[in-house]
Length: 236
Length: 236
DNA sequence: CCTTGATTCGGACGTTACGGCAGGTCGTAC
DNA sequence: GTACGACCTGCCGTAACGTCCGAATCAAGG
Image (cartoon, rainbow over all chains, first blue to last red; front, side, top):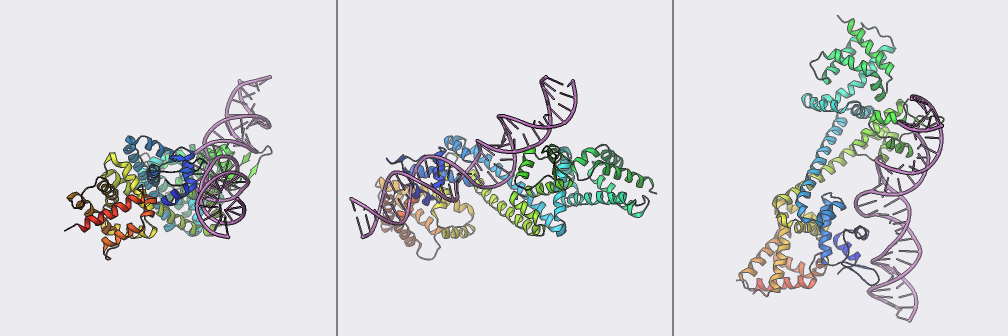
């Protein structure tokens, strides 16, 4: 029989943790001395070892309690836990890849903007668009998608600058920006249905909604859309 | 300018989260209306997007606040976060492997014992022994180590049964168990120094300490150690 | 027998990033 | 007039303990 301190030392846990397990009924000491001190026996030790193992696998104390009460369900639970760990691992891998790309390809002075864009796109795209983006990511390669995100904002701001500075719609500069703009839209819109027009309509019809999610006003967005129209109209 | 509800909708966060960010000073609305309602501007939107991005990378709100106040340290912080994510991913992989081995190779009726042993060994081994185990794991292959853990307990209980039932030390049964016992010890002790004797001495000298970590008493352990001696002595 | 230092007890608060609820205010639409 | 929606400020709850508290109890030494 061991005192709480001895048990804690032996199993490399802490006194506080053992008291916690007692509190929630996960591990009750076999007995108490007359003055209330906890005394743990070999069965408690075994149970504690089981608990610690399951904890390292990331199970909650509640799950552990349940599975120790129903050992016949243990196999199912362990399989579920493996699936859970695999999911988490996949998520982590995706995050690592994203972060690596950010650190590899981005201008150190521009991390803030790049970060901004990541979340902006996540918020901007509807769930169905997210799905189609995932599909296109596989087709285009992940780097293309990331750089598209970055280009997107630059393009909007370039267009906005053109509008504000009254850059002539038939200038090379304007044509260049709009060409890139259309190319970007084509890359993202499911191809087939006259992408330029489709993109244009989408931006026009949803400028209110888009401006609610982006740091540009609906007026600004409408302005650049019609400016782009002018540029396209004057294109040879 | 947006109200808190609009901003929450636009960025797919929640009103409660935005209020929380305000509370801890992470994201203060640009202004308040006379009646106290929060009003967020484009700058707030940008900052919120940055916050959400950094959160997906697993940074705490405190870290995020710090890095947004000191953008020049951003690169360092992102690298640190990548290292952190990599570490977690490696841990997850190790756990997955361990759990997979458990599910693949173990008797479903014996999961409890197997789990018990995992933690028992972790607690039993001193940190330096853990290190040497890691080294030997690579030499022997991970499966050998896992099965050794399982064998360990079976062997102790077999030996104990022999002692209790007065199995003759010169019987084949006793010799078989002790041979396995010595083989197991040899596999774990850093080879070279007369492994049998070294293992014997270690168990003998530390029986108190070992019994404090295992569900067997010091008397039982001493009994099996001297029983093993007898078996070896009577060995041809 | 008494003191001292280590251990134990139960209770309460702190941690993270919010979720949820209560009770009150505000503006608008019917 | 009132019903409704969106907003406000608290305050409690979460998981798994860590930390700190005053009070009781233990083991050992003088």
